[in-house]
Image: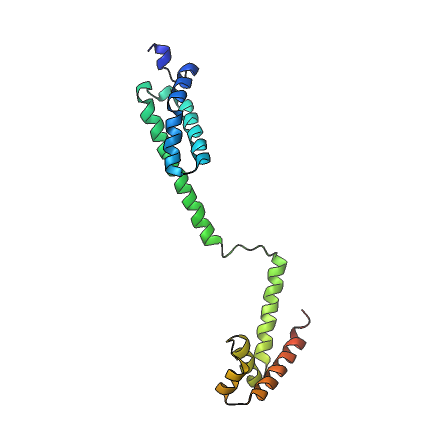
Length: 170
């Protein structure tokens, strides 16, 4: 090979290297990524990096150089995807599509709801919480409190009437 051929920065030499190794690099990256589009993008990046460093790469070691670049780029991609996934997992709970105004109104509503429940007479509050929070049926509540089902219905009715009156403004 002439000295011109050995200079990777020469366009004909670079084209020869690309034509010789591009398919192998693409295959190697596809095997690693299992995604032809990622493999194609990474392969292009490998040859861009080779072109940017063409003056410092020994022609006799170009094959091992580009495969090393390809492997390192793949590993960097995997590392980046893991960072993105970890970030998304940590921040998923904090993210919301709600506006700050909606969040504030929701908070105010919850505060008003809790205050209203707390202000209910004890017997009404007890029946309300057993039914709405613990999901117990009126019959179960009556048995547990040792009162009639009618008494449970009456307490629940009074509790709901108070709740509607107090929270109905929102």
